[in-house]
Structures are given as structure tokens and as C-alpha cells.
Amino acid sequence: MPEPTGAVQQGLDRSRSSARIPRYLHPGAWWLWAIGLAVAASQTTNPALLMLILVVVGFVVQARRPDAPWARSFGFFLKLAALVVVIRVLFQVVLGEPIGNLVMINLPSVKLPDWLAALRLGGPFTVESLVFAFCNGLRLAVLLACFGAANSLASAARLLKAMPPALYEIGVAVVVAMTFAPQLVSDLTRIRTARRLRGRPTRGLRGLAGSAAPVFDGALDRAVSLAATMDARGYGRSARVSVRSRRLNAILTLGGMVGVCLGVFGVMQNQWAPGFSLMLLVVGLLAAMAGLWLGGKRAVRTRYRPDPWRTPEWAVAGSGLAAGCLVIWGAWSQPEAMAIVVTPLSWPALPLIPTLGILLALIPAVVAPSPPVIGSSSPSSEPTSPVLPKAGPQ
Image (cartoon, rainbow, N blue to C red; front, side, top):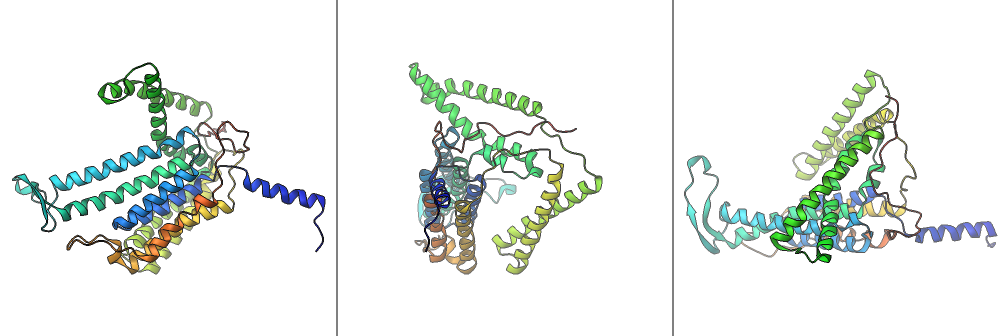
């Protein structure tokens, strides 16, 4: 076999070295991965599977979280998830009907009027009720953890840049809402550090009262600055299109979204025949994509250095979607293993196929490229604010 020439060898060396260069993964891949795990969590109340999803999410975030201020919000979402579990258990203690016979504590009860017959206040609290409330709260907590992982791994500014043109205005609103929690955590950390250096309290009620006013003041300043920037760059302007195209775009987009929602409901809840649900989901997706493509003609917007979609993106997105699909298949084939059994109380089984599907979601910790370090001379620079459109024709 002939040896490669000098130019060919240089090209091969350049391609190998570029595969090792740190870069940001496409934000859409991270969100698809997180959505797949969130779908998997919504299909089960088995605490073993839910804890496994939480461990997988935490491991991937620890392995591939970039060194950026917006990437430090995962801990905040974990604390919020723990609070959700506690609140769910408290609601079960105070208002829920007792399940089972293993009484833990007998609280004083209050007789409620007849129109509140579905509720109870106080009374006996059982071990079965505690396990039932904990597992239901844990499912919601894992959903929050998946959302927090997507916020920590994917930059909101890059996600906005990857939005289809037809969804750009909606995307700006969604991105601003999503960046609220990371920016709040970043501001709170910065203000606590400044107070600590000045010898002021950072914990307790005094620390909270001293940090609240600067945090909200900074949030208001950012909102005013963002509004002025959006107005200066022509946010919301669009090209002229015919009335017929606008109506067709609305019909396709709205009808496609309705079809997607009904198809997802049928697939996840197993209410209809699987073939009909999948057909409805596919038709809805095609109609929605056609509507987005047609609506994109109205957008006056360009992209500078769009994020590439390469093999790591396919692997990351595919691992998350595969986890969701395998857990859905487990909910269809083994429904008794996907739900916690509290009467009689027993340790849940660990179904094989859903467990392997969740473990597949560990692939991003290996195949995803390492994120670049902020301040380094990496070709993938991180934008610090949402990318807004240039002014276009009225």
C-alpha cells in the first residue's frame, strides 16, 4: 500500500488533532440527552431506577460541565429537588389519606367540612404513606435534576443561536427565563464573596437580608439592559410575506404541535394502540417541521460560526433518547416492575432493559469533547449574552 503524500499526511494529522481540541458540544445534543432521561424518569416510581438516573446525571455533569459562571447552577437544582421531596412528604403527612397499616405516628386530627371530604388533616401516618410520598416526590426531583443538568451543560446563548429562525422570538423569551436561575446563583455567589471579604455575615437571616437587595438590583439592571439591546438590534422585525403563507404556516405549526402532544401522550400513557400513537407523533412532527421551515422565511437573521453537529453530538443525543425509549418499552412490557409497591411493602425489583437503557446515558461522559477553559485560546469562544438579530426591513 503506498504511503500517503505530504499534503494527505498533513490533512490526516490536522483531522486527528482537531478531534482532540476542546470545544463546546452542540446545546441541542445536551437538551435531547436531558429530555430522554426526563422521559425515563416520568415513566417510573421505582426508587432504584430514579436514583440510578440521578447518579448518571450527576456523573455526566461532573465529567463534562464547562468552567463558566452559568454552569454552576446544578447544585441549586439539586437543593430545589431535595426541597420538593420534603414538601411532598409533608403534604402526605398532613393532608394525605393513610396507606397500609404500619403506623409510624398518630397526629391530632381535625374534622373537615363535607365539601373537603377528599382531604384529611392530621390522623395516623404510616410507613407505606411515607414510602409512597417519597417515591412520587423523588420522580419530580429527578425531573428537576435533568433540567438543571441541561442548564449546566448547555449554554443558553448557544442554544438560542441554534434555534430555527421561526422560533427565534419565542426562543429569546425561553432563554431569558432559563438563564434566570444560573445568573441568580452567580450573583449570589459573587455578593456573598464580597460580603465575606468585608467581614459581614453571609449566613442566616442577616446574611440573606444583606444579599437579597443587591441580587434583585442586579437582575433589574440586566433586564433593562437586555430590553435596550433588543430594541437597538431590531428584535421582532420580520420580512413581508403573503397572508396565505402566514395562514398556512399557522395551520401547519399549530396542527403539528397538537399532533405531537397527542402522540407523546399516547406513547407515554399507553392509552391507544402503539401503532396509532407513533403514526400520530410522526405526522405531527412532519407538519410542525414544515410549518417551522415555512415560518423561517419571515425571519431576518444571520448566524455567525454556527455550532457543528458531528459524531459526538449524535452519540450524546442518541444515548439520552435510547434511555427514554428503553424505559418506555419497560413500562409497556413490565409495568409491575416500574412502579413502587407499598401494599404489601416490598423492595422494588430492578428490571434489566430499563437499567441498561439508563446506563447508556453515561456515554456522554466518554464521547463528549472536553469543554474549553474560559480565557484560553480555544477556537470555540463562549458568547456572554444572547445573540440578537441585526436590524432588518420593517
